[in-house]
Length: 195
View 1 (cartoon, rainbow, N blue to C red):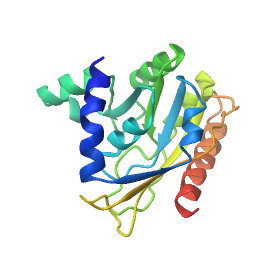
View 2 (cartoon, one colour):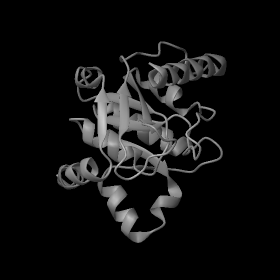
View 3 (cartoon, rainbow, N blue to C red):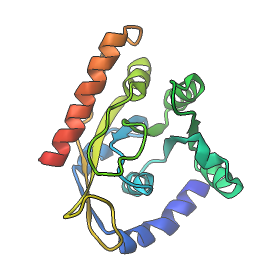
């Protein structure tokens, strides 16, 4: 309920201050309630963009530092966000994400693990492919691209492009397979920007 209320409040505000277009929305609509939305990361409001275009609640993985502020901690926890300790792989965050997916819900994850300040793609992390391979959920790749600028700016249009859902049929115990799947997923996200 809290998620729906916040989403309803922020949707018109986001559309006014940060207008956006969505391409490939049908790819998100046909996966049901249980999926992983995997995107690049170019601004602080990327999670808002992805949340308002989905009909389903998306539980985002977010850096733990955001939870240090009491107000943000209350907000993020009630929105279903999963705190992640950056640096080394956070096993607890991975397990929590898998638990949410296995319960039939959706998660959102930024494959680069951090925000790109230049608009260029960063090196992808293995978490998304690992979680997807362990749970067997469909992955919807997404690319957030500022139009005519390198960064998301107020009153400037942004394009959110969604690719076709895919299932990563790999062995989660084999690191090389996880790595290859990660780079494949990253390449799909990069192609969404160029097409």
